[in-house]
Length: 232
Image (cartoon, rainbow, N blue to C red):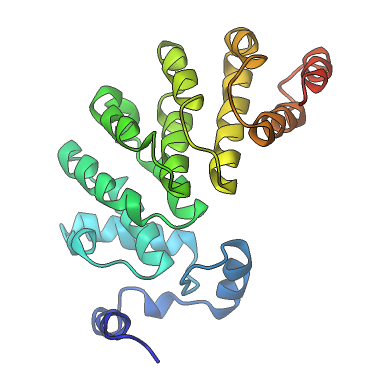
């Protein structure tokens, strides 16, 4: 039986008809396997992008102040932030969203918020706020922020300082760290190679980063062989 909060959400959705007409039951089955333990309706990304763009265009930002239950609501929330021009709104609403992130797809959708990349210093306080968190997706948020918006030579020292400070007790934080290290190596090989061998990170993340780097066609065979020798 649905709780009161969930019933209200369902009633609101039917009343506003924002999401329910786009539900694809077959796609839901696929998404349930890809993103387990999430409340998925089954709506394809192009439709969610259309919804988010239209809401922002009409200055209907009510979703940003709503309780979010369904996966698609959270994705739409993040997509709306990618369309909003007001830097203060984006910053504050992203901050509110971080503790509500409950899967990798919602977290990684922050890659679409390009205003962060254009205002790195302004948004950096969010990285500092969550870098010492012990919550899996708050940690992944920090790592994906660096991966998406701070991958620049001027931030390399900062990126590696954060890498060595975050908590990687959980799978999706480990994978986020490995992905970030892989991107660092591909774009800034010499710097990353100097830091890599003595990195103070867990063995799983270290080895997974090596695997990801060695899978890349942008890395030489010589580097791949050397990195393989470093595996812990």
